[in-house]
Image: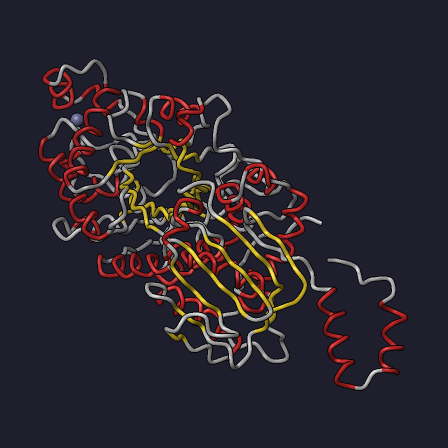
Length: 552
Ligand code: ACM
Ligand code: ZN
């Protein structure tokens, strides 16, 4: 905050005495304007200049939408109406005085890309311009952050609140195209309403990928019409580990919990309006016991299997030696791509012990027939089949960095979780990469060593560690750096049960990650971030986000 000028304290009574009432108001306003705090934006925009004066929302403010900008205009209008109660009509004539004008300008594409925007706030009005609707949307997100924190309230805010924003010129665009968060809905299912809330929270931080970890040993959470036992059997488990002792069962049946395809389609549409792409993750060949409990014939040796009731790594995995198992996988993915229109399907690929494959006649026959040299290459063979199938549907495969082990398939993208070395190797070989290492991006790890933290899977990733993450490895050649698509925070939920717990683990770390993936690397400044975060947490307070409080 800028301090009041030194003459303020003695001038004020003089002004009060000497000036008629109406002029006094003008002077007082000018003085008040002088004291408007600098905008506290998160993530920090590429460029920001502040000038004197403010723009205020009033009951006469309209939102003027240019051609193609209607969706962004209506979305912003709704967000602003809820707390203010102002009418904020959306009109199609551009450049109305006093309005918030939202316009597409394809000429901005070369400088700002699809997600960038120009936001100008003047006393007379606001303009948001962008080459595409994503940019218009993000301009609106920034405009809301310029207004008082209460603008983020989903409920009407009692007057008197002056809905003013400082006059600024902002030009802004993201550093990376993949700005992600993963929510593990397999270990603990989260209700649809919470996934929608998570989408809103991502959008508020200009994060744009939400990966849903839909299947695992402990549960199968997506309806597949052709194979209904996946959810009939796979979406429930006999019990879960008790809080505080993961070796002991709680004796309480869990589920059935899963998303219908209709629910997921609605979620996809909800996320699209907020420029968030949902990335489905269907784990294979490991972390597959939810499916094998329903269809044991697709394991190397027959079941029966039960949906796993403890965390950890499961030895029974998919049998890629079995043609029927391969057809089953394709059936599942065929329905998945019908529901999720995004370009990537995540096929997991991590933590798949290959011991069963060593003993399996079908897997060994496949290795021989295909001229493979190892079980690792058998996993690559599986990935290649899946990659071709996804390509036939116009989609790309992404998987955890274990998919490098038997050799990457040609079009695969890698999500690097065991450090960044896998990502570096993949990008060096010309593959796209999302960085999500356990050193910086595991939001299920503990945030503090102070007493009183909730039980967690272990590890330690405090806020400054997330903020310090650099997604582009220093050793990566310049001409391969464009392969680093971005970074992602992962919220695995073995030890996270409820939405409130999930918010506690995700925030404020997701805020720090948002700045890592959006703002220019050279703008990174932790002390400055901390100051802006103070204000930002007031916004999260309005939304009643259960973030972890900052250490004092
Ligand atoms: C992972 O954390 N196993 C991807
Ligand atoms: Zn097998």
